[in-house]
Amino acid sequence: MEKENLVNDISYAMRLCRFVLRPIGLWPMVYGRVSQTERILSAVLAVTCFSTVCFVLIPAGIYTLIYENDINAKLKLFGPVGFCLTSTIKYCYLGLKGNAISRCIAHVENDWRIVRDRNHRTIMTEYATVGRNLTILCALFLFSGGMSYHTIMTISSTKKINESLTIKPLTYPGYDRYFDTQASPAYEIVFFMHCMCAMVMYSITTAACSLAATFVTHACGQIQIVMCRLDDLVEGKESKGIELNSRLAIIVHDHVKTLRFSVQVEKVLREVCLLELVASTLTICLLEYYCITNYGRKSCNSVKKLQLPPITSSGIVYPKM
Image (cartoon, rainbow, N blue to C red; front, side):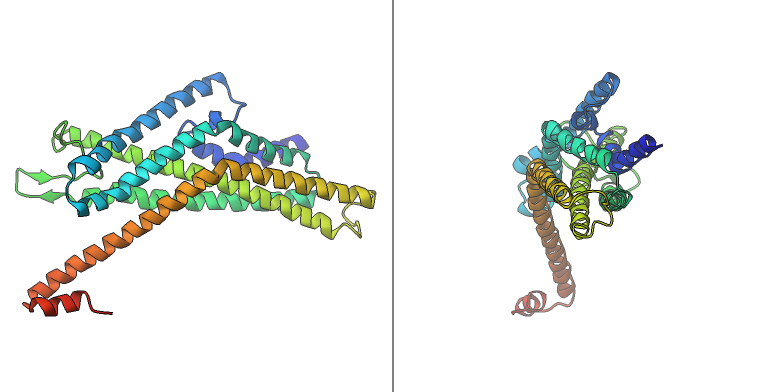
């Protein structure tokens, strides 16, 4: 029964990480105890996911940097294309850091194996729940907002010029130089690939957030256990039969082990966190720019309808501070 509970606890703590990493082919790279069949399937999934992202990134990147001459259009494309680029970098980085991530996962599993106190196990379970909830929130925000951008907004932007001509937009440009994207089934295939790319990108970001949330909350749980041991150091109500020196040695040992684990996690995730910070900051700045320019354009159109003089119009749209 105890062994069964141990397996369930470890599975509970790592289930969402496995659930997110497996579809993009990264789980066998960060977890050594998998079958040969799963390794082969993982390699196929990794090649498929990487090819799907490159199908979007390469044409859209070339179009944005070389063929698009309008600076405003370039800035509008920098947001989605930049996110695609950062997702590709994170994907490659997580694959390269597979051994280091595997050591962190092994550390988490070992902590679950050696815990004996019921209160300590409860603390670890509570913090594992926090990590799972953070992963779920991250996935909800990413997939709900991102997939809406790639599907609903694209479909709703379709323009019918006349009975025989309908302009069907795509989320990412750059394919018109190679084939007619408005023809069927070319448009449907490209649209489907864009949706698949979006799912891969958001899975990559969710995977990085899931690893960070799982490892950080686990470290927090271990620190909380050390604090409980410190509270019980003198009285020894929870550790009867253990000498004071032994209790102190256990506290020091657990604290040092948790600090080493924190250093491992920091080495594994610092580049991903830095990349995420820079990419998110640029994305927020670009979104603010899009809002300001669209608001300014609408304001100019509204003022133009009023037939106001240019000086008065500019004063209304861009008032002096």
